[in-house]
Amino acid sequence: MTVALAGFIGVTGAGTAQGAIPPAPGWNLQWSDDFNGADRTPPSAANWQTDTGHGYPGGPGNWGTGEIQNYTASPDNLSLDGNGNLRITPLRDGAGNWTSARVETRRADFKAPAGGTLRIEGRIQMPNVTGEAALGYWPAFWALGSPYRGNYWNWPGIGEFDIMENVNGINSVWGVLHCGVSPGGPCNETTGLGANRACPGASCQSAFHTYRFEWDRAVTPNELRWYVDDQLYHTVRQNQMDAGTWANMTEHAGYFILLNVAIGGAFPDALGGRTPTAATVPGRPMLVDYVAVWTRGGTPPTDPPTDPPPSGSSTLYARTGAGLGDSAGSAASATLATAGGANYDGTPHTPQVFTSGGITRTYNGGATQFDLFVDAGTSVGNGQQVRVSYDRTGDGTWDRTETYEYFATDPVPGYEHYTQARGLKSATGSHGDLVNGKVRIEVWNAIGTGASTLGIGNQSVIRIPFA
Image (cartoon, rainbow, N blue to C red):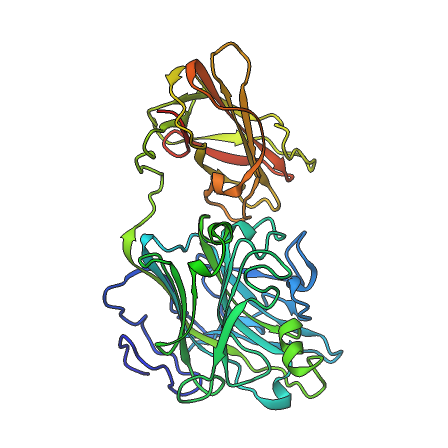
């Protein structure tokens, strides 16, 4: 066992867990898993969910990358090793079929605080296999933007941070950013904006190394940085792309973290020809000693939102009894009826409706903002949608109506943030001053087969652009 020191160089022997999460002076630990537990037991169900099969339900086949393995929850593919590590082992059966494992954090809100920095770090030994025996191996430690959950077709716009990738047993770590549109775009998809280098000291395959990603909102322009064993080897800056691309990647609820070992696919094929081959050897695991998330500086997000509204706007809360008011009230919830498998994208279907009247205010030239707490429980493929309408004079005519793109919630219980960052789907009419006017919010399930929950009271807020 090595001593836990900040800034350590993780090149201890194969299979050796370090022990406790290392101290990180100046950083605040937000979340971690040290993978302690008995041999062949699963990772913590409170921290991780296990992906199975060849793709997400309704998502692209072969996980969108051409990889060939079937992901399982079998302890043969996925388990703790009893020595303080998570073990992900790709296997091949007698018929030549490959299995492996992939897990992702239940939390999907890892994000740099405003004016601060996010740090995601893992201490990992790649599968200890090289040469022809390694052709097709594709271990990875990475993060995806939370809007991907339940949608599965909005990549790469929602962002992907590849903290550690490796293929074919090459002594190199790749750090890559995926963003924008595919193919092409500001992130040169499907390749992404990446860099790679050999692991310091011992090879990537023969020893543990520490892989770190930082998202820094304390500098201008903002930066994304990749490290191996504390050595910086890749940086992407905000001014390398247009503002819309950066916003789509950063102005959502946050990211979830993934660990997996794929077999075959576009990346290993690009560097090794068609993979795997008959010479590829199964049974070489990736070992993960720990994964941890820290933040430093800045202003952490509040939950529920309590930040003061932007200058010149008004803040309204959805409240029990279908009203909108400038006081929050107590936390409560409202049920959004199922879409029943139909598509109500853009058309309210048995919505929850909240209305406020008697408003006299001056239009300040801004735009509607909102932060709605929504949850679809364990339902797969549900998407909540909001429409905001303004009656400028209270005469019953909705002079301005804004419908926003629906928000696909993940199949994990717990509220998620649906905000205007999803984008405006359509708008009719125009804004103007409110004179005894009304504001109406309609929220419904646009897609899916299950009901959803909307947090109200002190949980969901709308900010209207009026002084």
